[in-house]
Length: 508
Image (cartoon, rainbow, N blue to C red):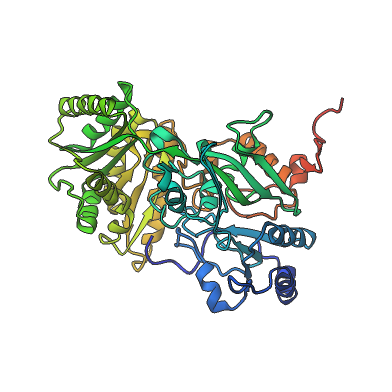
């Protein structure tokens, strides 16, 4: 999003003035835990310096944190959380700040823990095909670290040059190649995590799976509400023998949507399959010069990878499907450089759309692939009704939509109108059998829409999980749940030193 609305109208937890009044004491204690070191200052409290942390990628809302602390070790994180737990101080964790749902939005009475100094790849284990890394390492840096041995890390968000792997785990991030290779949750093998009371736990490891409850699956995508991750073990893959990408243009958006459904319906699973409409195509081409056709209404990028013979065969089948459905443009990459250029245009689509409007609001919802034509048609109708432009860029293969709503925050009421438009898009996603988020998370953006997808019983059960990890509700409050109940109201579920209490269940 472009310029931001500094008058935050979003309802957040009431500020605890008793904590704010102790700010100086809190800062002094944090400085004892994290003194200045070789990597720089350990605590930031100057209002001007705090501005760098006042928002994340969803920049319509801003709030200065009370203080930012920058630990370098798991032990420091443990001591910070134990201190905050003992003194009833809220905590918000932050990675690279690329979140697009307000997941890292600070609070005026909370300690923000920045994990940027956790920036080392700790181990590259090629025999077990995994990497052990600190959470502040960028997504792309993992692939760079193992490229010399012909490996890479598959999930590749558009922000992969900047987004941190810890943030990817928190939001269960996706990317253009997740259709075939899975989201973050399918590529994380283990984590080290610090609980709110300071206890350090390990979930998973280098092994492919573990017995018992899938707590690692619960933690992945938990948006910083359950603990703070200080180490991640991820799966790495061999680079495919061959990879070729096709640009396929259509005169109608609906025809491109039909092509997506038909490719998957015929049992073909591309390495990646992305779609852009005319406004997004024009913006990306002007920005990157990727060679996109400008005389089409919709463009698919379909990449096939694997053994050469398989790729050649599948490309022929994809071309036949596209031509049957009325494609007017088909161009195949002839080199890795050209293929990467095709993807460069798609991955630069978000900043490129910034040329079309002073501001844009990036949405994230997921729908069944077969409903793509219908949903795109209805988004176009909403665009006319709200009198706001929209550029569609999305992971077509898994139905993950990213409509970019164009508006100007300098025009009174346009931000609110863009938010209402976005809300209607997400409600439409749920209506057709989809979900509120595919990879950006709920955060504050979709928090108040959760009841459109979950009933009260569903939400209460999710909050019981929250209470098991964080019974006092100190970790990232104000995110995900429209109404956060006290754990006692739900029947507190608390795990401490291996003992679990379920007061609402009979004892045996």
